[in-house]
Each structure stands twice: as C-alpha cells, then as structure tokens.
Image: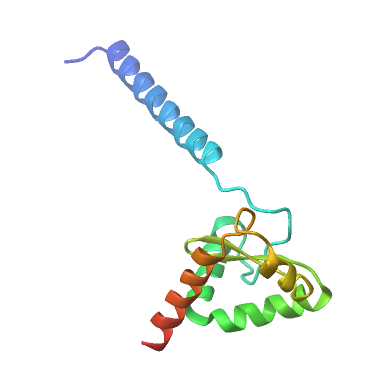
Length: 128
C-alpha cells in the first residue's frame, strides 16, 4: 500500500501540472488574440461575459439583419463605428459618413477583395 507522503506528492504534482497547463492556455490566448479598434461592441444579450458574446454570435447567425438594425439605431445613426460579434470573430461596422472614405482607401490600407468575398459568400449561403 502507498504511504501517505507519496500520495500527497503525486497530488501536488498533478496540481502543479494543471496550474502550468492553465497558465499556458491563458498565455496563448492573450498573445494570440486579435486586436480590434477601440470602438464599442454591440451587446444584445443580457448575459455577462463570454456567455453574452456566444449569445450575440448565435443571434448574428440566426437574424443578422436585425442585429445590424439594432446596431444602426444605437451607433450608426449617431455617426459612430461599432463591432458586431460573429462566430468567426468581431466585424467592424463603419458609420455611413465614412463609407465613401473606406471605399476609396488604397489596397495597402483596406483589403476590399476578402471583405467582398465574405459578403458574397454569405449572400450565396442565404439565398441558396
């Protein structure tokens, strides 16, 4: 039979391994997180934290048009940019006053082709 100190050493080692794993995961998430502009994020769900973000992403998938309409009422109608939470990550919605400026921006600053491809892929998926 194992002695008490050996069991204690094994449980302490398991705790150290679990703590090191958790710290590694947190470090990975912090260093590899996408940086977004400092604009407000549209919050629809009343749930706090990541649960609210998941709910907002689900709402984007099920009723994206109404999500954009809510964002328009809260931000765009006041000339403000905002972020929308989607399953793929957040999407910046530019205020209408700046659309022409974004459209004329050079390809070195704005990648229009990938954005257009994403929008068209979404339209094809919706209307297929």
